Image (cartoon, rainbow, N blue to C red; front, top):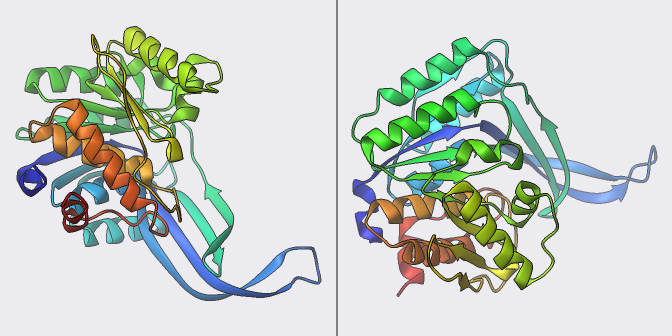
Length: 314
């Protein structure tokens, strides 16, 4: 299955971001305030958000086509540069001067994350930008799966989701959604929705405290949204809720956790490729869980590669 990933084409539509990492050393506390002083050694830029999902697809040897919105700013140029390095097609990135490119800046001292600074823009895109997004989507004729990567930064709108549902139905391809609670109802009838525990709580408006709560949450979401549900729970693994099937629980593969950022994007990328290759939802979820176990041992949003995933299955 993993060897067949290279023949699959996946569209990723969602909120693209630029992730910046500032690495340094900490030797003293500031005399101005009780905070560490970070002496900067280097900084790196990597694709984030929907762009990280696309990066994971290409790292796993699939072909990713990215659709999203950026501002007319220097961060946009950096994001496109880094995304192109990862062999992701960025022809469908829409530049909207009314938006700004979302950035997440992480400051690390001795490899420990000390601070995150977010440059956000959560305003929904205007109708003219919606039309460009929808037009870009319809230009893709031969694809094997469609991924929605929703970070609630304004690209995923009700109108965009209506067009996505119509498009995937006409193409008879799976729709995998990485959700945000406030847009819950727009995902109805997707093939698979992949909330983490916090997102599942937000979609239901209640806490999930134990295994029984997880089962109730998954079954309810599956029924309400008429979709298969994969709830990811960090160190507690994942739970798959297929319509008409008993819940399927998968223990975590991770024995040591270094950084969980981007693990959800790894799961979505792996699941979309596996389903495209004809895997059952159980098989795809088991493989995604294994990929997530590799991911959390890495710093930042570094993607999992196909050779790494293949080696873990041997």
